Length: 244
Image (tube, rainbow, N blue to C red):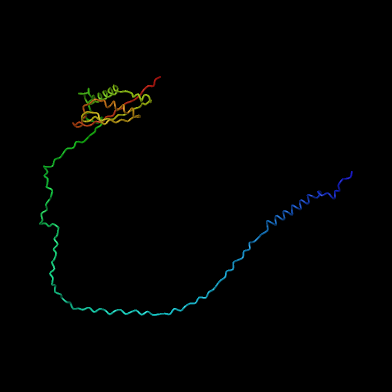
């Protein structure tokens, strides 16, 4: 069978060769464009130099004539005595300093030693309960020795707290409990003063102070034969059992 087309006039038979040649030509042009260098041409400014000739003037030298100093004044050596016509009164300035002949008067009279009165000031002594010589006597503990009176004091104090103890209802509702330390003073007359407390809640502190405030009057403690203030501290426990 004969071919329909002439292979010699086929356009696409050498297309790969033409493509390679065109590619090389483009690469050559690209390389030439990258390697092409340009230089900035700037015209250097031409400065015009003007030269002006300066003329120096000759300054004439002049001489200044200074005036001569005046001649010295002649001092006469003759002294003239002028008689004074008016009498001049001299002012006498008296000294204000005192001399040994002047008597020194003391405005304040001298006080004799017998006239001085010495007042004894009583010291406000506060002795702790543990070191006092004679402890305060709780009513019902009279006539006992020191150790027995101390034990009786503790027993009466516990009985007083138990008999007057009342759990605050607000504390029960809030579930408050704990230990309250109450400090107070038994003064020289045996009264309870200076009550202070320290605890977990204010409601419990107020109840503890109320119990201590109800303590009876006692026989005051004494130190060296004199009644003195005695400080004492007692703990009060607030505890409750929750219902099952």
